[in-house]
Image (cartoon, rainbow, N blue to C red; front, side, top):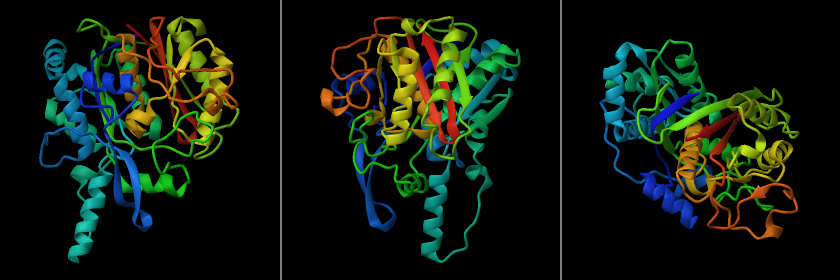
Amino acid sequence: MIYLNGLEAVSALGADRNEAVSAIRDNCSRGFRTIPGYLPGGLSAHLGTVDCFLNAPGDADSRSTRLAAHCINLSRDLISLAIRRYGPDRVGLVLGTSTSAISEVEQEGRRRIAAGEKLSFDSRIYEVGNITAFLKKMLGLRGPCYTVATACSSSARALVSARDLIKAGICDAVITGGADSLSAVSVSGFYALGALSPGRARPFHRERDGISIGEGAGIALAARESLEPGALKLMGFGATSDAHHISAPDPSGKMPAAAMRQALEMAGLRPGDIGYLNLHGTGTRLNDAMEGRAVYEVFGGNVPVSSVKHLSGHTLGAAGITGAYIASLVLDGAPLPRHDYRPEEFREEFPGIDLVTAGGRYAERPYAMVNAFAFGGNNVSMVFGK
């Protein structure tokens, strides 16, 4: 078990905890906007954006780096305390990302093509691992530093890696989480797969039509000890692989179910101990059908479940840390994220699970689970407590 101290996140949910709780309570996110011409053929895209000022941490930064640095600065005093206490050699940095600085590649490419200039490559920015290398330099760290890129489970895997570095005695603390900015390459890729919703995603709805992509980031300081009151505990995790298809999940859901069981076993809990399950819940037909099947196999209808991606957007490489952030809010007393569906809009396909569709519901037990699944059947489930 490790503590996630100073957990902060930004997404279309909002720039701080108060904004995020308000968005969950009202089931309304102000961070979504329709961007004309974002997709091939000049089509519009409905995307989740971060609407707050992001300081530039240096001359070789990217928007993903700025998103992560914003979260670091929200917990800068706590991070500085850990660096002084443990020493810069004993503090690591592990972040997850999917797109890294690809949006800067796109912008620079368009500018150079329009100007008739030769395309060039700036290795200070464009390498996938540079988001962590840059932040390591910014903070003056000398511990292990690396980036995890396993698509939509990246930041969940980063949390697991941080836990492993601490458990192995390599680090006393690890700054961990993930960040992803909007990218026309990734959004257009989901559009080409037929997996992008033209509007807001509707996870677990009978007429769901794809994901809503959003940018976002989250950062936590992982350590063996609680460095602040109410720090979130990562009590257990499970990690499995479908080995089924490059992008589609195994319809049986057997490996995601195995990941959930592993997480419960490591945490020393039973399915009935979980007060809330934050679904991966992308809003695609295949993912939701698979996840609904796996959740029912493990929990039946005894645990309230919902997705938050209709409010935050699918933050891709930051999805796992966004889920941890939601778990922290819920365990601190925020209402459970909900879907404003009528029974006939979801019950026929998902009759057994307890999908949260009414406001005013709260976690009745002090543990939460978060699912983060990715292309290639890369599955991570995590159990959190306070």
